[in-house]
Length: 200
Image 1 (cartoon, rainbow, N blue to C red):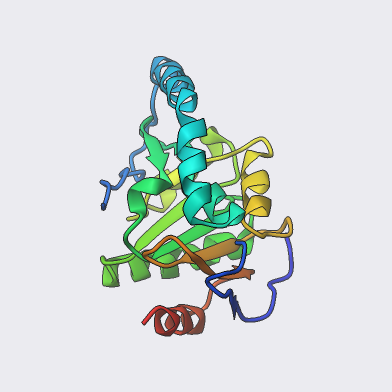
Image 2 (cartoon, rainbow, N blue to C red):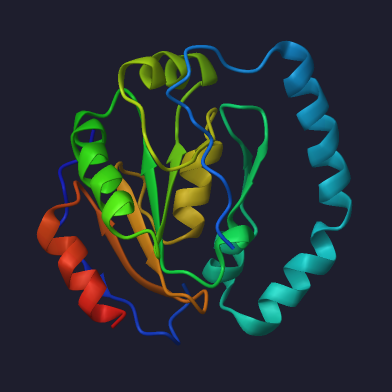
């Protein structure tokens, strides 16, 4: 667990850096083994066209932004969470884990923000195992979708977006897909208000 960093600093638009259904991960039971195998096959097929999509992104965004919008992860319901589906809306992307106390403490605030601002997209990436997140979802239902990225995958994604290896990490992107701010450490109401003004 890392000590929260200072208040977020905006990232200039030139710096490297659609509303899908919620996954309803308050449900007590996740997908079966067959569902995950089917998802894995679908991901392999999707990867075949990833090169072309990556090239299209790199023509319009920085390397970090291209990495952001190329993220595709399994959700608790077995479906695919593709961040490109959220282009066109402000995005709060939150990296968290069930074993990270500041992460868990900030989730209700992010959940409230999603309820109050349906024009924004809040997306969580759990840097954790599927069983851990399934058990957690039984205790705390969230209104925003969660992608599963355990086994070091989640931290690699966070580093690709400018993270330094700690949790929680929250990344703000505008509706045009540009990363505008990052914060390592627990999100506070003042951060969300500042970011809202930043995108106004």
